[in-house]
Image (cartoon, rainbow, N blue to C red; front, side, top):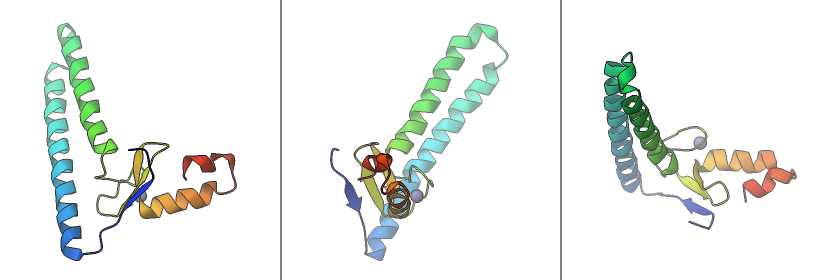
Length: 116
Ligand SMILES: [Zn+2]
């Protein structure tokens, strides 16, 4: 996505549906992450499984990145239930409140280009 974009939902039913879908993705990610972490715990002290341990760590990071890069939570406050703004410079989603705060904070500073 190349443009700044606001995703605002006003209808309460659609808002609830959106929040539930976000919750499903977050719960899936959390369950996957926990499963990988438990696998790591089993081989933690086994030096011969070091490469397996590292692969599990990479998979955990990938899962975390799926959630971080998605619209499912704000990149700053992690809120999962707010309207979101896409920042094309940072390629991240922020809740509209955090985005506005960041815009205000960087206003008249050279970093203002980071939050158009
Ligand atoms: Zn936020």
